[in-house]
Length: 123
Image 1 (tube, rainbow, N blue to C red):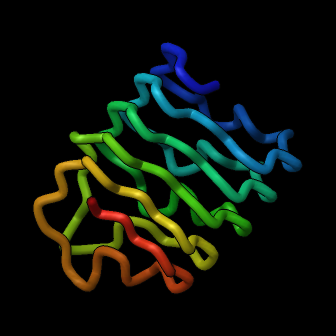
Image 2 (tube, rainbow, N blue to C red; image 1 turned 120 degrees about the vertical axis):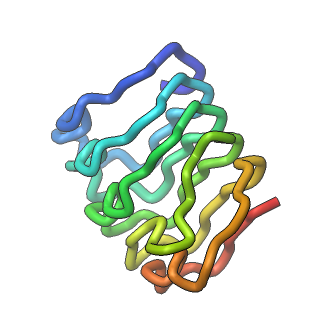
Protein backbone atom coordinates (compact mmCIF):
# COMPACT_ATOMS: atom_id res chain seq x y z
CA UNK A 1 0.00 0.00 0.00
CA UNK A 2 3.12 2.11 -0.36
CA UNK A 3 3.06 5.22 -2.56
CA UNK A 4 -0.63 5.52 -3.33
CA UNK A 5 -3.19 8.26 -2.76
CA UNK A 6 -4.54 6.75 0.47
CA UNK A 7 -5.99 9.47 2.69
CA UNK A 8 -8.00 7.34 5.12
CA UNK A 9 -7.91 3.86 6.60
CA UNK A 10 -11.17 2.71 8.08
CA UNK A 11 -10.90 0.90 11.43
CA UNK A 12 -11.35 -2.83 10.87
CA UNK A 13 -9.55 -2.83 7.52
CA UNK A 14 -6.82 -5.14 8.86
CA UNK A 15 -9.01 -7.18 11.21
CA UNK A 16 -8.47 -10.54 9.43
CA UNK A 17 -4.76 -10.03 8.72
CA UNK A 18 -3.28 -11.53 11.87
CA UNK A 19 -0.30 -13.04 10.00
CA UNK A 20 0.83 -9.75 8.43
CA UNK A 21 4.40 -9.03 9.55
CA UNK A 22 5.07 -5.63 7.91
CA UNK A 23 2.74 -2.84 6.85
CA UNK A 24 4.02 -0.26 4.39
CA UNK A 25 1.82 2.83 4.25
CA UNK A 26 4.54 5.32 3.32
CA UNK A 27 4.14 8.06 0.72
CA UNK A 28 0.39 8.43 1.03
CA UNK A 29 -1.89 11.23 2.23
CA UNK A 30 -2.87 9.98 5.67
CA UNK A 31 -3.70 12.76 8.15
CA UNK A 32 -5.23 10.92 11.13
CA UNK A 33 -5.12 7.38 12.47
CA UNK A 34 -7.98 6.25 14.67
CA UNK A 35 -7.20 4.40 17.89
CA UNK A 36 -8.27 1.00 16.51
CA UNK A 37 -7.09 1.35 12.90
CA UNK A 38 -4.52 -1.44 13.32
CA UNK A 39 -6.84 -3.90 15.12
CA UNK A 40 -6.09 -7.47 14.11
CA UNK A 41 -2.40 -7.00 13.31
CA UNK A 42 -1.20 -9.09 16.23
CA UNK A 43 1.95 -10.36 14.46
CA UNK A 44 2.96 -7.12 12.80
CA UNK A 45 6.45 -6.04 13.78
CA UNK A 46 6.98 -3.09 11.44
CA UNK A 47 4.77 -0.21 10.32
CA UNK A 48 6.10 2.37 7.91
CA UNK A 49 4.18 5.66 7.80
CA UNK A 50 6.85 8.04 6.55
CA UNK A 51 6.08 10.81 4.08
CA UNK A 52 2.40 11.16 4.91
CA UNK A 53 0.52 14.18 6.20
CA UNK A 54 -0.05 12.83 9.70
CA UNK A 55 -1.13 15.44 12.22
CA UNK A 56 -2.31 13.30 15.11
CA UNK A 57 -1.62 9.82 16.40
CA UNK A 58 -3.65 8.66 19.40
CA UNK A 59 -1.23 7.38 22.08
CA UNK A 60 -2.97 3.97 22.12
CA UNK A 61 -2.98 3.47 18.33
CA UNK A 62 -0.23 0.83 18.49
CA UNK A 63 -0.94 -0.44 21.99
CA UNK A 64 -2.92 -3.37 20.55
CA UNK A 65 0.08 -4.54 18.51
CA UNK A 66 1.86 -6.88 20.92
CA UNK A 67 4.75 -7.64 18.53
CA UNK A 68 5.42 -4.18 17.13
CA UNK A 69 9.13 -3.43 17.13
CA UNK A 70 9.55 -0.54 14.71
CA UNK A 71 7.38 2.41 13.67
CA UNK A 72 8.61 4.89 11.09
CA UNK A 73 6.90 8.29 11.24
CA UNK A 74 9.65 10.16 9.39
CA UNK A 75 8.79 13.27 7.37
CA UNK A 76 5.37 14.04 8.80
CA UNK A 77 6.04 17.73 9.50
CA UNK A 78 2.57 18.45 10.90
CA UNK A 79 2.65 15.62 13.45
CA UNK A 80 1.78 16.79 16.96
CA UNK A 81 4.12 15.29 19.56
CA UNK A 82 2.89 16.27 23.03
CA UNK A 83 5.24 17.42 25.75
CA UNK A 84 2.62 17.20 28.51
CA UNK A 85 1.67 13.54 28.07
CA UNK A 86 2.59 10.31 26.28
CA UNK A 87 3.03 10.29 22.53
CA UNK A 88 2.91 6.49 22.17
CA UNK A 89 1.97 3.71 24.57
CA UNK A 90 3.65 0.40 23.80
CA UNK A 91 5.30 -2.42 25.70
CA UNK A 92 7.18 -3.84 22.69
CA UNK A 93 8.20 -0.87 20.53
CA UNK A 94 11.98 -0.61 20.45
CA UNK A 95 12.68 1.59 17.39
CA UNK A 96 10.83 4.83 16.68
CA UNK A 97 11.73 7.09 13.78
CA UNK A 98 10.59 10.71 13.93
CA UNK A 99 13.22 12.43 11.82
CA UNK A 100 12.22 15.48 9.77
CA UNK A 101 8.97 15.94 11.67
CA UNK A 102 9.50 19.47 13.03
CA UNK A 103 9.33 18.48 16.70
CA UNK A 104 9.85 21.60 18.79
CA UNK A 105 9.76 20.23 22.33
CA UNK A 106 9.21 17.16 24.44
CA UNK A 107 9.49 16.13 28.07
CA UNK A 108 10.11 13.04 30.13
CA UNK A 109 6.37 12.30 29.78
CA UNK A 110 6.50 12.16 25.97
CA UNK A 111 8.09 8.69 25.81
CA UNK A 112 7.43 7.51 29.38
CA UNK A 113 5.13 4.67 28.24
CA UNK A 114 7.49 3.05 25.74
CA UNK A 115 9.44 0.80 28.10
CA UNK A 116 11.21 -1.29 25.40
CA UNK A 117 12.55 1.72 23.48
CA UNK A 118 16.14 1.23 22.38
CA UNK A 119 16.40 3.61 19.42
CA UNK A 120 14.70 6.98 19.06
CA UNK A 121 15.67 8.85 15.89
CA UNK A 122 14.93 12.57 16.08
CA UNK A 123 17.31 13.64 13.29
